[in-house]
Length: 50
Image 1 (tube, rainbow, N blue to C red):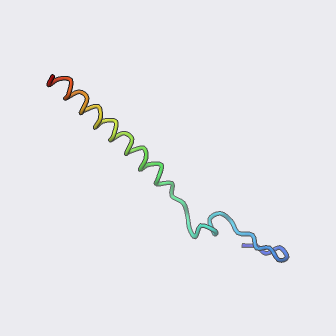
Image 2: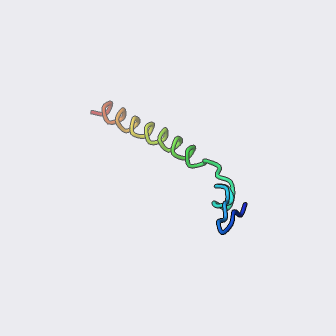
Image 3: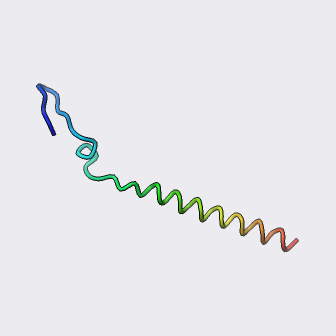
């Protein structure tokens, strides 16, 4: 944190109150893989049973 006259300058980490672990990226990736596998399974089972 640094003060320049009347202005207060903070870093992005200080402004957010902590670190940003980017876990959302992993959650979205895993969710995408699971949904793709589930929809493929539904499609395959549906075509085999007809």
